[in-house]
Image (cartoon, rainbow, N blue to C red):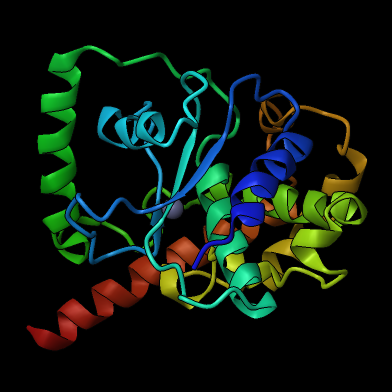
Length: 240
Ligand SMILES: [Zn+2]
């Protein structure tokens, strides 16, 4: 199960990674009274979802709108390996909120009804059918963000000994780039990004992402996307 210390520490780490987040960050297991999404291990929303907010209110944890990082699989046992895997998932969801844009408080009852319907539809859909490309929503900008997030975890690790126990966080626990997304491995993107994560350690994500990605990084993504589309065309021709 997800330990109370994990739920308390991950938001602090999130604020250390991106101090520009001036709202609370919530980490919580997927609420059992909502349909369980079959297509993801964790999720978040671009708004403060009212059905999830209800859960935080009932637990006395609600402190106003902010990113909700929901973990679908709680791995049952609180071991270091499981905790690091969950941390990677939570940070993946955090990366979807960067650069940070403050979330509004959708607390009206109408929002609850609409969002509950939207959640149920989303949880039950087959995302393999709806994604146009395997990296949809997880492209160049997301990969760059995740690499900065991952670098900053290591940078701040000494302040989060209870969470990390001095153990390095495997980059791939953040689940970005690589074959699942039809792209090169995260290691290749890390190399292509060069020193940007350390050079920009004091910058906001908005400032970093306002600049074009390093050329080698953009070239790698371009080559990956070109190869993927080429492969699709070849498959279509072969099947004709
Ligand atoms: Zn994602």
